[in-house]
Length: 84
Image 1 (spheres, rainbow, N blue to C red):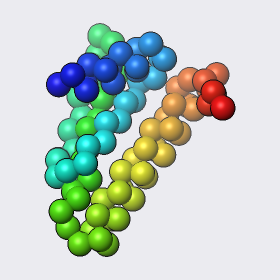
Image 2 (cartoon, rainbow, N blue to C red; image 1 turned 135 degrees about the horizontal axis):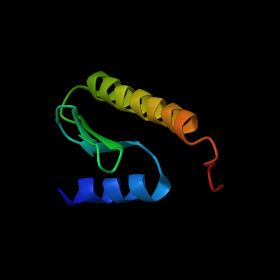
Image 3 (spheres, helix red, strand yellow; image 1 turned 180 degrees about the horizontal axis):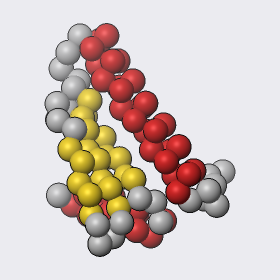
């Protein structure tokens, strides 16, 4: 539960409505919409117990979701740039 609070804190502090938390382990996708904070928290897992191609498929799905979140960030808050 602490991880969700940390993700919420980052989302509120940075003005980013979507947040994605990825765990190593089998876990269903869960999305929590926090209306008062105007933040959506999504949790998903990468099942590490399968065959290598299955693990890779789960990792690719998580990476794709992360890219989708990055695109949402650009639409919602285009002024935020990487700090690199």
